[in-house]
Length: 130
Image 1: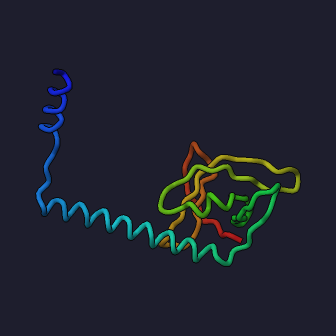
Image 2 (image 1 turned 90 degrees about the vertical axis):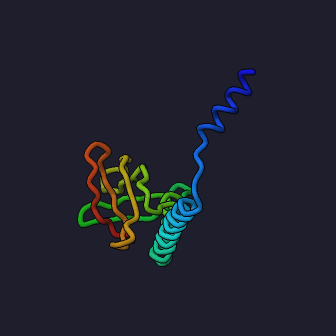
Image 3 (image 1 turned 90 degrees about the horizontal axis):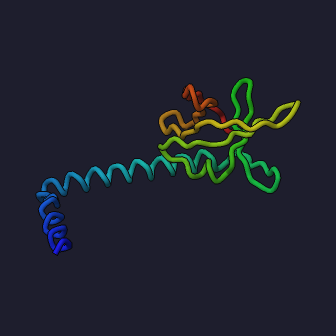
């Protein structure tokens, strides 16, 4: 008996969309999918001629700015779209290799990788992929 009441409540709470609303929703979803696909294609073109480094049996891309070099795994770089991804940045230096957590994202307008080296104070700076 309770199951029947739950089914009736679920059917009453179910929202019905008009054909115009359905078209608007589908158009928004299609536009979002198209933007994400364009972003992935642009990222794939950008990374196509970049050098891949092998370190400890894994493949990495090297990103750099005027004073820092970081290595980011190939899988993470290829999975970027327009979302922000939390990554472990491996810093290469003269003294020792250090790991640092931060955020990266792909900026399709600038055609560059944006990285924030701090999880506390998020500030994205453009980095060049070598």
